Amino acid sequence: MNATTTNQTNQPPLVQGLPILGNTLNMINAPIDFIVEQYHKLGPVFKINTVNQQIIFIAGHEANQFLSRAANDYLITKEIWGGFGKSIGAEKFLVALDGEEHFKMRKIMMRGFSPRMLTNRIPAVAELTRKMVLKKLKNKGEIKVTSFIQRLVCEQLGILLANKAPGKYYKPLAFYVRTLLNVNIVRMWPRVALYRPKFLIAQERANKFGEKIIYEHLTAPKPEAPDLIDDLLQAVYEEGLELTRPELLLAVIGPFLAGMDTVTNTLATMIYALAKHRDVLKRLQKEVDDLFANGLPEVKDLNNMPIMHATLMETLRRYPVAPMVPRTVGEPFEFAGYRFEKGQTVYMAQGVTHFLPELFPNPYEFDIDRHLPPRNEYRQKGALSPYGLGAHKCLGFQLGELQMMLTMATLIHMVDFKLTPANYELKMQTIPTLGPEAGFKVQLVPRNIHKRFTAK
Ligand code: HEM
Image (cartoon, rainbow, N blue to C red):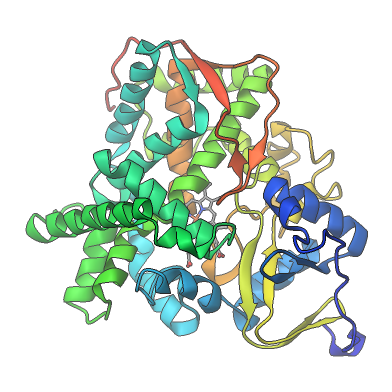
């Protein structure tokens, strides 16, 4: 931004809020709707008060393009995520690092988060999905969508990234991760939550799971199929990467932290959208049934499903689970006529563009055709950013997309989804990741449940 256009005394406009609470409730109830509304009223930079902090937002198409170029020069994650790490005695971990140190750590973890991790694990991931669906069908087939999907996703992530599904460790692991995020990042739970017995027990169980993963990789390595944990252990034990025990444990359970709620909430909103838009579901059923007619899909088949891809893009656009991410100003900078000072808390609200009609006409409509030729709206630069911007952009997004497409394909082939009640309207909740409320339910109705999945 040109410094001459900047009025140095110009403060970002403050959004009106309640005494003491400020805009806390808006941020809990419908954060993205609230932020989009402020963007339309106040422009690309504005600030809000919550109970415990003042936040400056940067949003809009120009902001997304500016931030994807320059965020790393001015904005840091250390202050925000460092507090997260400190609360469990771990200072060094991927999201909390900046600059060169972050670059090095990301390089170590790159292969372990790459799509090739799915190549040999498709049968295991699909079989897990099949078994969980059959178990639910035995019990009348009604599911609470987010808890069902979270369990499934957590087991899948274990298989994909650590060669070990969490099984009995799932519940403590999920509670541990959720509490850490709610206290340290979303800041909606009090710090005392970190001292309660339920949290301490969950922490101990999650760490035990992490220890088991490390032990199994050290004692029975599989050099023919190395995974994220092998790469981490090699960096620590052979290449001199210095990590304390809590830091290593956090790196090992990191994939669950990053992928569990994001993938779960995206899949859960996709199920809602499909149950509502039966025409889209029909198109997907055709694409998926054709795919499964020849046995289990391979990675190349998953990458060649235009209707599934468009449905996923539209779900990520219409229901972004991480539409804004927090940062601290590390170096002063100027944008849109405002000066940002060192130490200020800034949210990059990269999901606001998803709701701008100049980029996505009728933005509140769920319309998968906008992502198919000739429209291809998802390809506009700086318009669709579900995975963040800049150096910390999601490292697992390609693997995550394949995981989501495989899981949805398997589910859609096996069952139909019926909302319960039939006229249900989705309610979202925030804590910690934006997604459907816990009470969102569907009835699974059998379609193709008789056949076992076999690899081609
Ligand atoms: C719908 C699926 C997903 C969404 C929407 C999503 C979104 C995001 C976002 C917005 C960030 C940036 C955070 C920031 O800038 O502060 C991020 C970072 C990250 N994500 Fe994802 N994510 C998804 C799935 C996954 C999966 C499946 C994995 C791996 C198993 C993963 C691994 C990571 C990692 C490791 C980072 C940190 C990157 C870094 O700090 O350099 N994500 N994700």
